[in-house]
Length: 155
Image (cartoon, rainbow, N blue to C red):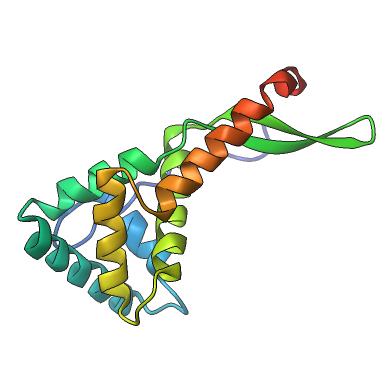
């Protein structure tokens, strides 16, 4: 008999306006120094900007952008006989979404300008159209996995 009890699966919370778990995930990644109210403010302002610019539902633009950025495979470093190999591995959907959100925020923070809400909205619209820094990062990860395809047996 096991000494420890099994861990209960945590349910992800949803945000107050859109009632969406993906939005809550994104806000938690925007979060810095525990200032969640500021993170929500940044996110909702960027959604308003997307609504004004594209005349579409901002939630559908967000879903499309995350779907376009989400990687299918990535490389992971494995040590084998004294040397390190970058082995391509498949990524589960939740881990892929987390990577996509991270890449999206890194790309939006690198954009020129001072307003984070504006930078995030531009990056989301660009990602939904298939361009931008986050899309470039995904393509780079796929290229690395393709280049190291011969090392797949090291999994």
